[in-house]
Amino acid sequence: MRRPRVMIYDDDQIVLDMLKLFFIKRGYEVFDYIEPVVCPLNKKPAENCDNFHPCADVIISDYQMPKMTGIELLQNQSKKGCKVDINMKAIMSGHSNEKIIKKCNDLGYSFFQKPFTFSKLSTWLSEQEKLFDLSQQLAEG
Image 1 (cartoon, helix red, strand yellow):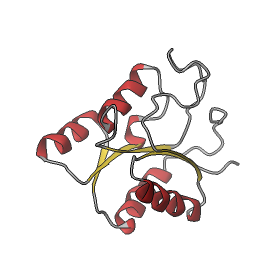
Image 2: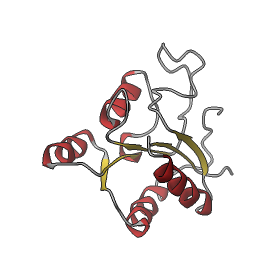
Image 3: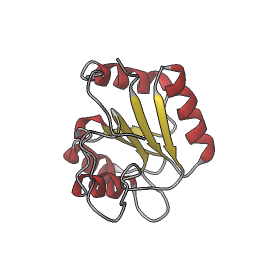
């Protein structure tokens, strides 16, 4: 049985570090990125994902980042063949509006308004973790 894995994208190092610590304390293997990388585990990043397995159990991205938004990142991952279930993806933002929240909901992503409490994130994760299959292999990191 493996540990659950999360990929976190946020261009704010403090937020990234806090989330990393939160997930480590929860028993997760954490891959964190300060810049959006569409397929960080793909050996040929310009091409479609060549992994046979999902790269993580959960992906969380900040909305406003350099080069692209979190929504664009998650959509680009899907276009490249990301195998992480759409319901296991979330966007967080300190500068949101109804249009962004609606778009996240329409696409199947969960949304967290910054600043959010870790109890709110824990509640969401507890629901997601019920759906994890920790016997399923993940892509090599």
